[in-house]
Image (cartoon, rainbow over all chains, first blue to last red):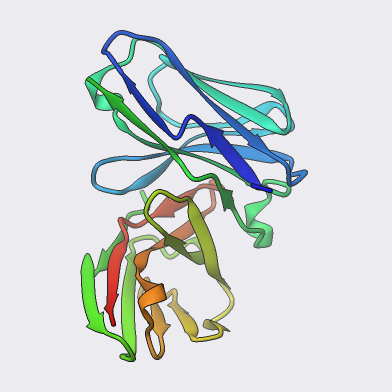
Length: 116
Length: 111
């Protein structure tokens, strides 16, 4: 059983379209995250949710809107896609979100988004 | 603002060699530092976590050290195997509860 699963694995779309990426975790964790890995391979936090509540919202265009219907799901909706949105997007989860207590992050396998 | 760099960007070694991967961070105010492994088409797997009060952690053939004063961490891999081929990322947890990742070192272990 996959602990953190995200779909789709690949997403190719035209500029200006709206698309969603879904993420689900079956670990019973309270906190979920979205990270973006750009072409230079840097992973950067975008959002984190704890029990459906937004905790971290980094400087991300408001075309990106996370939605958490329950603590096991965190979806990412992107409006009006731009060329610069092309990247790999990773979902992750952690037990409580209290990362300073040395709990680990568990990552999904990523969604490679290509905007043409 | 925390910045993390990793040297080298890529490394190719013959099987059986011992090797060291380097990670540097600009802000020593970190809670902990983690080393991750990333395989192509897959997510990241946490390998080792070093708390800010610790100097090193070991797991099997892997040993990670942390020197907060110099802002450096190293990942030592003993007796490397082809299965170790992957990208290795280090990440520091800052006081804003964010992980700041380095760009990774792409390791190839040749049979």
